[in-house]
Amino acid sequence: GENVEQHPSTLSVQEGDSAVIKCTYSDSASNYFPWYKQELGKRPQLIIDIRSNVGEKKDQRIAVTLNKTAKHFSLHITETQPEDSAVYFCAANRNEKLTFGTGTRLTIIP
Amino acid sequence: DTAVSQTPKYLVTQMGNDKSIKCEQNLGHDTMYWYKQDSKKFLKIMFSYNNKELIINETVPNRFSPKSPDKAHLNLHINSLELGDSAVYFCASSRGLLNYEQYFGPGTRLTVT
Image (cartoon, rainbow over all chains, first blue to last red; front, side, top):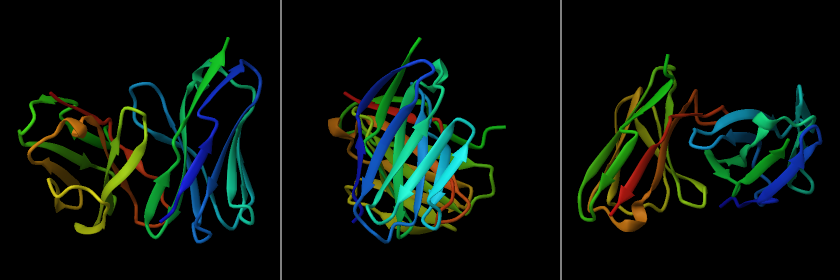
């Protein structure tokens, strides 16, 4: 089955700086890669996703890049703000099943 | 308007008991899921249903039995609860099985004592 690794497990950045979270996946047939944000005590919510026919996607301060050859994808958050503090999960979809990474706890330091 | 709702929000019970968690979505989606999030925050799929048909049944003990009476509802019944079942259980729904955003419910925190 699919295996998704996510790094780092914790990340602290100064407000206004950029944050990068990286994921690798094992199954080259995976074709959909969403990122979810989970605030403390809340439900996971989709923030951005990318399909395997695209190399990069951007939505305001958030961008995702995908390297299919290397089987890794990354989340980039620019100009970080205190409300970006949360746990972020990457995921890979293969055969109708979404496999999540282990999560990154992002803390924005004011 | 609540898109995906779950009841109850909290569930505290003793080992050996049987309990149920209910989930409803009003998004008109065809696919629903159950996920388990343990104390380390790992999110793992348990089951998925598409048009009331079971699609994914991960290696979950058969003490866990999902039931989908219709496309808008997916309930989870757990028999003979064990300490290791303590976790947050999330229901989710999506338009279909392939490559669609999943909308999560608020979660049910189950504590087994």
